[in-house]
Amino acid sequence: MANEKEETRLDRREFLKAASLAGVGLTGYFAGSVSGCATTEVLKQEIASSLANIKPEPVVYPKLAGNKVQPPENGCLVGFYKLHAKSMPDSYKKEWMSKTRDSENLNDIVRAFNKPKWDEVLSKTIGPHINYYEQTLGRKAGIFVLIDTPRLFLNFPTLQAAELKTQGIIPYLNFVSLWPHKPALRMELDDIAKGKHNDKLTLLAQGAANFGEKYGGYFVTTLHEMNGPFHYWGQSSKFKDGWKRIVDIFENKGANKYATWVWHTYAEGDISKIAHDPDMYYPGDEYADWIGLTAYSRQMDSRTASMSFDSLVHKNYEVMHKSHPTKPIMMAEFGKTTGFGQARWLEKAYHSLKQMGGIKAAILYHHVSEGPLSTAVQGDDKNLTQDSLSALREIVKDPYFIMAS
Image 1 (tube, rainbow, N blue to C red):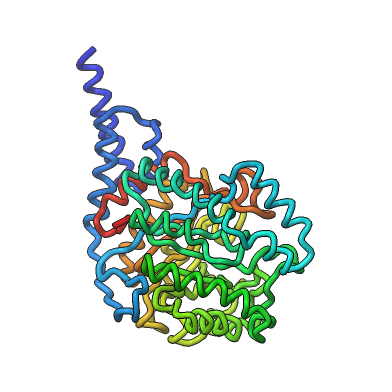
Image 2 (spheres, one colour; image 1 turned 180 degrees about the vertical axis):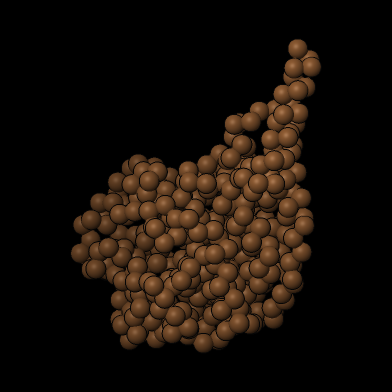
């Protein structure tokens, strides 16, 4: 019996070795497809050794003014996005949906949601997500995205952002222009550019300045993927005027000492087939601190379903790095549909990230999208599988990938 067990163990080792040489994805076995401590250790060593063999060419960017988030000289900040507004207690969720449904204009929304209680409710959802990544990956995330908050109110989400900062995590706030699917509740670009919403944006900027004075720098963006056709602000001739108006208001309130602006573009594969050249919408060096890129491999998208992270990103990364050599680059969004080689795709993605030394932060999206693509696992579900989480646990042990300080 002992000899039989030993022979089985050796067979598994030989299998793993052969699979590695053949380029077969190994991370799929983390969830238990192959059992035994020996094989688990082999898999860990596979990831560790492959990452250790990558020697990135160092890219050092100029220091940003003020107390903004500085790009690391060596390494890449690791971030995550996970839907958290859905974690609200049902009573608040019903109230949120009811007020959204019944509001007829932007002022109705402001009156309904510009209240401290919403920040208090959502701040309680942050801790479980921090704990989730710490327990699953063994380390806290370096960046965490608070993307849903601006749809609930227009003041700065101080309590939520503070919950992150006190644990060494950098907040990333995406000030989406309220509820994009209900036109009456939108902040239209032309109205922003003309100053129609200065009062609301000034309130937001004052809160951003107050937070920064106490807690330091954080990432912020708005009107993301402006060169694509996906959002109502997309491909608008008014984008640069609207963006500048918002950033100027933050500057006037002193918030830009801390608010680290990410000019977040759509830059996925051959963008010319879908989107405009991002530089058509570049507001100028004084209005952007970092450059953000989006890249997803979606099973329902025949163009990206079989594309690796490198093939999605590398060309556009090179173009942005050449066009804006002083601006650190962030993968502001990336991910892979659940269940379709996700673990192996992610393993290769982080290998590619380490090879692209100009990318100083990368935020993996871990969620189920809302909308027409979200049709169960065949849709745009990007929840991380157990295989993927196990692979990530090994990947973030590499010191190149920077987690919470």
